[in-house]
Length: 388
Image (cartoon, rainbow, N blue to C red):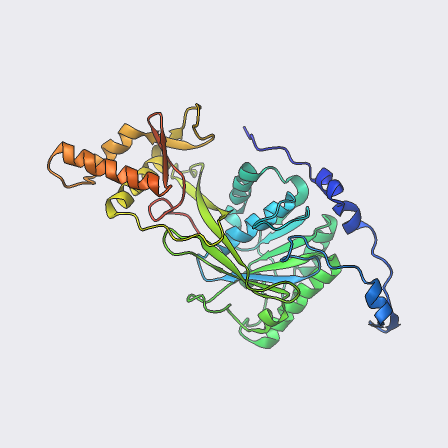
């Protein structure tokens, strides 16, 4: 049973004025035509509509952005969280948002994309038809075999925002390291945004070192917004840095964390997990490293929950829709795995209590009424979470 709050996308569009503003026929073009070109004057500049945002100070209609980072930095999880929130009319990092219709082209990692969406639905609410997706390989760059169909799909759902995930999987023929081929890919994205009026956000890989985006610099030179995503150090928040914004302020930091979410077992009964990006506090400092014995105890708890965790019984201050294990079972498993090499039972109990205290102080676990559960991802709890 899905207990997520009901969301009415059309009502949200109407209440925000987005429905009438975005989808009425555009005004006739201004200026004098010279073939495909138009000659404009200061009077045309004064009559030009004001620039507006889908996400204040970051994402505007009809523009092009790239969100890039090294492997396993969480860039896909972050972008998906941002645009899912926009489909609900919710911003992040104290930035105002307008309700959007989002088309997400999931050309990489498409096999797990549906599960990620359902996790966000359960966490944030049902976006309904405001977010639709394509979960297959799609060629946007030359020879642009799927570009016309993507444009048609975006127009059919009246999308305000199109995500291409990733550049590498949609590039087409050619070499992303050459300026000519990269410029051709940018030209295809320009056609997508100009013919739909939507913002086009590209998810792109960085080098393994994370120093720069992969491929030709022609991409970063052409976009309106460039955001570099970097995974935090152990226990610290990850961050997206606005490296360049042509019409908004550059240099803003957008902190986030990845939370591990347990999924239903696969057909073989093996445990599965995914991640969801959550906004973190600005300037969040890394947590102090956990003692080795605490990390070991946390790994034992995470393994138990994945393999045999049970829904936590409802009760006062107990988490909803979470799984955990009984405290005594966790303790017994730590004992069986010789968490402590102390000779006496008293000393082994003391070691376990200190490990539990460290985990609770770090905000890694919750405990109540004889149950223990995970609160946050960490070195012990996020094993098996694929982070693109």
